[in-house]
Length: 297
Length: 162
Image (cartoon, rainbow over all chains, first blue to last red; front, top):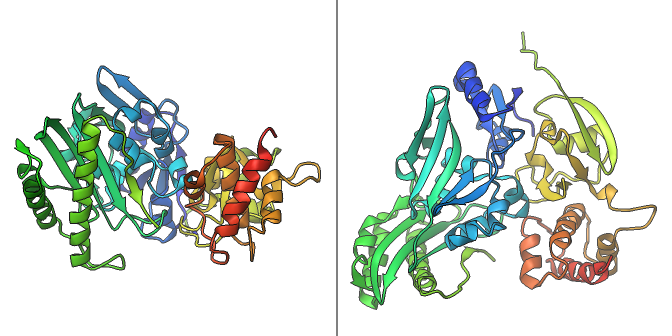
């Protein structure tokens, strides 16, 4: 399958890519890892006239811990995050990076590309929504920082202007006593999950001091389950508070029936995933090492 | 009149051999390998980033060559299944797939072997989970994977110290 013919531009810097975006207009697209864009182009769902390749820009792939802020270059590949000791300081990042699609896709796909695409079934937005995440954007006019919650606007729609790009993703490293977990349920490795859930919480004895819960693949964007969080914040984690949170998370989800399952099935799956990520996050907050990530056959 | 699309000159090394070619930007890496360079060991299966039949090594990393444009491989070192054999001697991974009968029709086999090469380059003693994870992006519709799994275990044993 061939995409429609396009003009190829190889950016030497992100600044040059931003200039090109401004000059070429709305018919231009950025090529990062290409693991979503290229299939979309081959299927002719996307038909850009100009492609601006970012893969030859040096210095766009890095993971740095700067005073408790984890900075990731926009073109950092999932596989690099999976293997990074710095990223392992936030276990939920490893949960996500180590299971996105398969080895081959993780070797190419990038965190900046994933966020900028804003696929409703993408993994990163769900995970990063439970953390204090800033998206640093660049355009000719200057730079700005957008909190992730304001960055994702709708399905495949972000706050980026047509001549703007993602330069860096910055994540505040959670403090002591914090634990997080991400689980994504999928039928096979290379497909998008049927549903996913992420949680990041802080425990003090058995009391949940702070908590953020996000759901994936069950709405037009990743969903922050705020009512579910209210069921737990400031309370002891008991069967009763947990059951209330699970019900609230199911109510917050808005799944579409498709070949992956009916809406009822997906809502039930959300409940099960929230219950399981909560259990893992609580154990991790106590310092236990527990595995989490993508679940498939 | 249709628009004129400028071709791009690229240089790449494929199986340790230098190539300089001019390519249309939309030419996929797998098509460059198969149609221009006549390396038909790399297969096209699903053509939608699922099956992994087109897996090659790009600077040592397994990638799906149907999901990369040839222009992106400019300056890169590519290894295809044809590059595994050295001086008439099969690669240990190729031998193991033969000995353990890790194939039936053979369509997925080049991709699986290259995924195995990346795995063993990073992890000389892969456990069961490591192997399953390493080949999760390669679909086989014949074997049920059991012999492929055994072939990779055998390749890991035979590669030690190699």
